Amino acid sequence: MLKTSLKSLDQSEKIYSLLPTIRGFIDSLSSFEVKQVKINENIRANFLEYDTATRDERVWEAHKVDFDLHYMYDGEEMIDLADPNHMKKEDYHEEDDYYLLHGVEEEIVILKAGELLLLTPNEPHRTGIRTTKKKVRKIVFKIRVL
Image 1 (tube, rainbow, N blue to C red):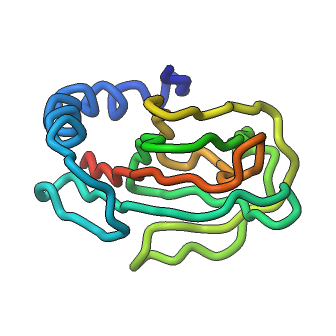
Image 2: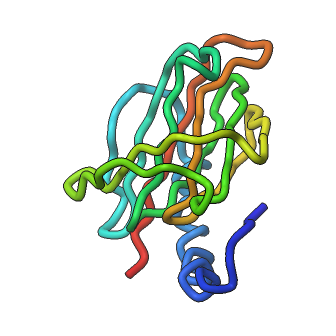
Image 3: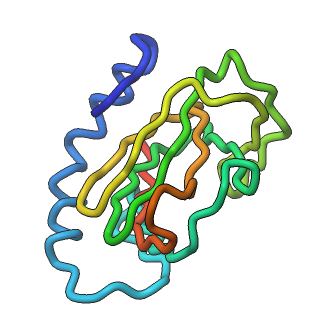
């Protein structure tokens, strides 16, 4: 699923040329260990393991440069999405390419083991919301397309 604005479509199309690299990386996994891996100049993989929580315990974030491709390795979580124009933004942290936001969810996605979710730059998302399972292991691919 890719939901994007017409304005972001050109940048989103560039992602598709990088997907075979990400697919090959996922297919080559033999184990899961919390770490960060630089796949190439455009793609980093953050291996995460955490307990999901209530909405009130999670924060909204977005990125100005990087796309996020969330791959659920094991577990399940709810991810809230919202229109950036309906959110209150905090200061941008350029070094880590993120800013926090405040607002309410407008869409909800349930991400289950084996599924992926592609988030475009400036797309507010709140991850790690509990469904039925508490612990998740996932890989967030940070994809830079300039």
